[in-house]
Length: 230
Image 1 (tube, rainbow, N blue to C red):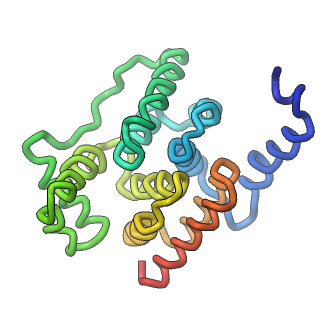
Image 2 (cartoon, rainbow, N blue to C red):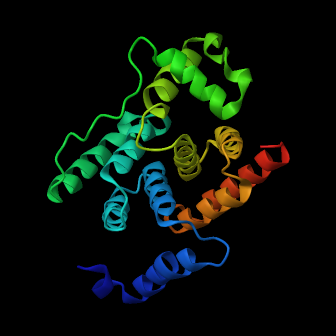
C-alpha cells in the first residue's frame, strides 16, 4: 500500500522535515549539486537502497549528471566494499537505462595500471600533505590504498577532488564506526577548502537519511579535526 495512504501522519511529518525544513534551514543550505551528491553518498553509506532509488530520481531531475552519479557509486567501493555497493550499481544502471541513458558512459579514468600507484600517492599528498608521499611503503594495505583507492578512483574525472573528499566524508559518517577515519577525512576536506562550517551543512542535509546519532558523531569529528588545525 502506498505510504501516504497507509501512514499519512508519519509521511506528513517525515516529508516536511526531509524536503522542506532541512533544505530550507537558514545557514545550513547547500547548492543543489552538492546536496544531491551528499545524500546519495550517505544513502550508500547507510545501505538505504530503497531510499537511494527515490533520491536518485530527484537528483537526476535536479540536474545531477549520470557521470557524477556513477562516480559516487564507484568510489563507494573503497569505503564500503563491493559486497555492499553492487546492489546500488545495479539500481543506477536500471534507472539510467529506463531514462534512456546509453551505457556505458564515457570513460573517466586518467591512470593506467602502470602509473596508478604514483598518481594515487600524489592524490594522497594533495589531500593530506607531503607526509603521505611515502605512506604507501608501510605495507601492502597502504600500497593498495594508494594504488587502488586513490589511484583508481580519486584520479578519475567527473568529480573534483574536493567533491570526492566530501562524498568520502559522507560514506564514513553514514556507515558509523569509522570515527578515526572520519576525523582524518574531515581534515582532508578542510585542506581542500571544505571547511568545518561546510561539513556541518553537509551533515545537516544528510541527517534525515542517516539519523541523529551518526550525525552528532560526525559533527564531533568535524569539530575534532578543526581543533587539530584541519
